Structure formats: structure tokens, C-alpha cells
Image (tube, helix red, strand yellow):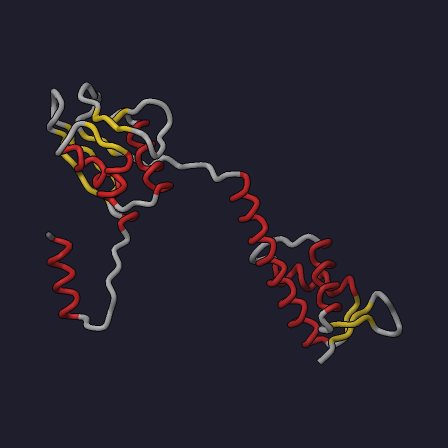
Amino acid sequence: KSVQMFEAFYNVKYSGRKLTWLHNFCSAELKFNHLKRPYFVTMGSFQMAILLLFNNSDIQTFHDIRENTNLPEKELIKQLQTLLDTKIVSTEGDVNACSCISLNLGYTNKRTKFKITTAIQKDSSQEVEQTHSAVEEDRKMYLQAAIVRIMKARKILKHAMLIQEVISQSRARFAPSVPMIKKCIESLIDKSYLERTANSSDEYSYIA
């Protein structure tokens, strides 16, 4: 209700703007009344949305939770895993699309007020490789832009001096390797941004 009231206020005051709720950054406090003693638990809004479903039933299927929260499967598994790790809910085996999640009616905690933090999932080897590839491509583009800027200003430059200037300009962002810089130089020669001078193979000239 409070969200709807704020949206109504915002739409009147700022017509033409779009209000987007970043629920993954939100937190809430729930009071657990279903146990032998009450607990006040601070958690993310996704976890809150999942746990509020148990007001209607002590057991929820993965399918029902997904339907009611509209969370993507990967995100839902992550949030459920956090709740399972804290033993607030339970299930048999690993969480999957066929899981039934039960409220742990025997849950106990020494502290009556505590916070749940979302489990950090490790990226798969494929995701890590994709991230590394994307970073390397971004660095290559940065280095090529730096080489073009330097050569455009200097016109002609020795190989060692060009390497030194590229490292100097890139130091604030990252430490480029010499082999990577050499590959970028070769790439720019292939693209006809640079060429080796007639006098020396160790000297480059900028092609306007």
C-alpha cells in the first residue's frame, strides 16, 4: 500500500518520469510469531516476499513461490539457499524446480534480533571465462585508443618509446603487459592506422 501511495504521489509531482524500484537493494524487518519466542529479523525484500507466503501455508512449492514472487529461477534459488542456510526453512536435497519448501517450526536462535545476508554464489567457470574475455577486449580497445592518440601527436616514434608511453598512460587504469601492447600495435598496423617506417622496422609512423 505504501508503495502504491508513493507511486501515485510521484506520478503527480513528476509527470513524464519513470519510477523504478530497485528491490534487490531494499531491506525489511519481519517479526516471527510462529515460534516459541518472537524474533525480529532484518532481511532483503526478496527473502521477505518469499517468507510472507508462509502466512498461508507451512509448505510452499518452488513453482508456487516463483509464481507469487515473479523472481527469475536463478535469483529464487539463491534467495531460497540463503533461507535454507539459516535453517528458517527446509527442503530435501538441493533446491530445484521440483522442491517443496517447509517452514521450520522448530527454529531457534540465541539472538532475538538478527540479520540475514544473501549467500554469495560462485560464478561458474564459463561465466568467469566470459568475464575475463570481456575485460581483455575492453583493455585492448583502451590500449589501441591510447596508441592512436600518442602516434597522432608524435607522428613518428620508436618501438621502445611507444611501449613506454602506453604503459605510462594506462597505469592509472591497469598495468598492461608488453605482449598485449605489441598485439595492439600489430592490430593497428593491420587496420592501417600505423605503419613501420622505411628506415627501421623498430619505428612506427602515424597514417592520417
